[in-house]
Image (cartoon, rainbow, N blue to C red):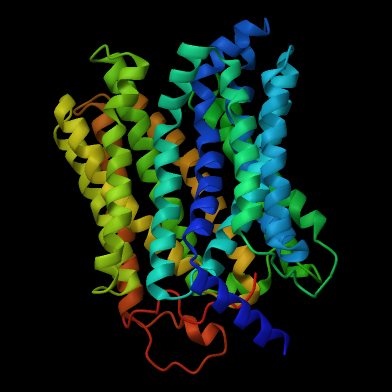
Length: 487
């Protein structure tokens, strides 16, 4: 009876229209991802404003991403346990409160704490927002459109973050980077309360695996901070040590998950081919595009003398490409299996990076290359998310956390590795061109692997839910079929 009532309620919501819900939830994604980079360009002004030494730069630059990436899976599990709408409202309100704290900070420790709390609030919000978004879509076409909007919002926010932060800092001062989150957060809370229906928490109230959560958070934080420090020649050794420590903690986390009675990441998640594939695509998407944008920004400023704001405007075509690529997943998804769609997107990223490598030294080529990479990212993001979230109902929240964690790690590790490569190579080709070529190779190789695995019949998403669907492999999994009835 309860399942029938939830199904009837969902049908009623679908009939009333789901677009306002999708808009509100994509707004959460946009604001939370924007927070990763929007404050970075304001860091020098922040440090001057609170009379802090330049040595505080690395911590202030990484603490948001560190908390965001490290707490995503725990945030997803909290949503499963207490209800995704309730957890989303809590995280969104916390994000706004952290903005108020940062805007009024007088000491550098207050700034660091505010940024860290913002990252933690985003980690709580994003997995629940994605789970609720998937449940809001009444059918396959609507779910594909919702995922396209979600991916476009996240990727566009990531690309526009530096530009938005620079404009706010130049026009209104660095405190505006924090102040703006207060009215935005209040508006999002109101929109969620008006458009997102209450969700049903899991009945299973097994204790949360806090030890596992601590290990996973520590591993992700160590990897992100280590990668950031490795970008600076003076701190490269320390960064390498932290990254190695992160790998060691990750091994301990995996061992803990095998032994724990109620692990943080359900054992079925490790066995889910869909989730593994989606996480890998999410990682490669950001590793090969975030690094591309950073390298392009540095090249524009250092070689061509473009201002930071001017470099930000030069990368606007990347955001436009992401939006266009996400929109293309509608018509393409009706013709291609979802794995082939992911491969097409990854191939687009590879083509954009390869164009940048082959035409090194041309501003026009930079604009064209990032546009092409953006198109590919828009397609691959939607497809990767569709694959990774096509899992058993009990894995819905966990899947969203894992996918977002993969994307955060891709950004951190990809940027660090390719910046190191660009700085360490100068013969016979420029290091930046070599780094772009490596990014193209990684995206292209991943596209090939996704195609090969799809053609081998490796995945049966409906079978993971206990369904009886017989067609598998290259037959397109119905994007949106068999979705869970309540969140």
